[in-house]
Length: 273
Image (tube, rainbow, N blue to C red):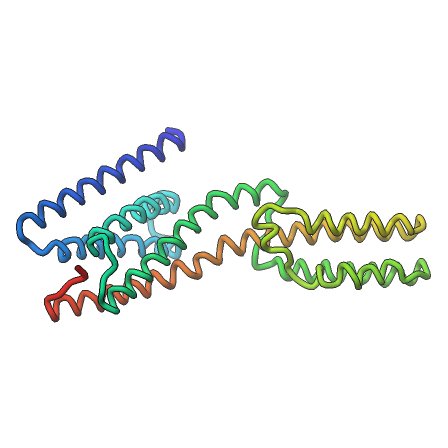
């Protein structure tokens, strides 16, 4: 079964489950039972399952199914939980402070999840197309090595050529570039404009250099290319990690508020509707 057929099947199953739950809620409501209590427990169960995905990624020694299977279940259960939440609150914003806070928090989690899903589909193929991948945590150290190499090259150039042209150029155009990760948004949106601008600046510089100085300029150009590659990997890898810093902590915060909401509901006999 190819990926397109599998996705269509998963979507169809999700729609069928959603439709079945909506019908069950309607029947439950028509039976004069309090529907929010029923939908609330179903919603809590699905939320709990979604939260288990992060724990599954941390537990690799137990045979709990493949990570890819859990990821697919998480995605489609995530779409389903939006329907469940809307049914639970009656398709309107709740009035209570606690309930409204839960709704806002839920909306942020949903948006961050959708953004994360898009990033996880778009960015990894781009990372593999641009040469050998680099471990994210090691990128700052690699950048520091390139900076030291570039500075040594500039000093060597000044000593060997008896000219400060390349060192002056480095201070004006490249010192900040080599100081750390740069051009995050440009790399994220697949724009190589900053790199092309630096290449153009080096081209303009080389028009006024002698043959010996041009050798140093070519070596400096190579270091700029390597640094731009590291910036690319850093920007995309950071994006793949950053959305989780929103999604995961807020998910656990939401579960805490949901439990608090549950206590309030059963203590006072109210609901979100």
